[in-house]
Image (cartoon, rainbow, N blue to C red):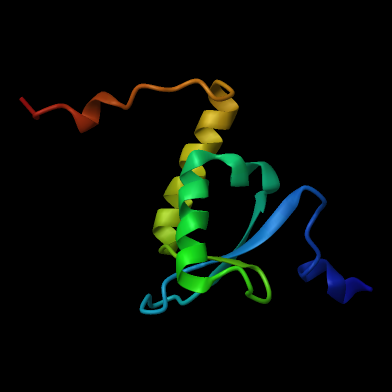
Length: 100
């Protein structure tokens, strides 16, 4: 029974495999809340996954992006869902400053 704990995913969560084939680290497994699937950022990635892999894959859902890109995407989603429950945020000034 103990061995199942590694592969079991809590109710309401989903296992995904992230990584690009030419990336050094290969694929990494992440567990995300199912609610993330409804977020526009992740939705775009799911559409790309469908184009690349099709719907009939075995094992965890594969997402076609680098681990770094996925971590950034997850951070953006977490920030939105914890801060304001879906309200849009202004980007930080550092993106627009010209350094003077």
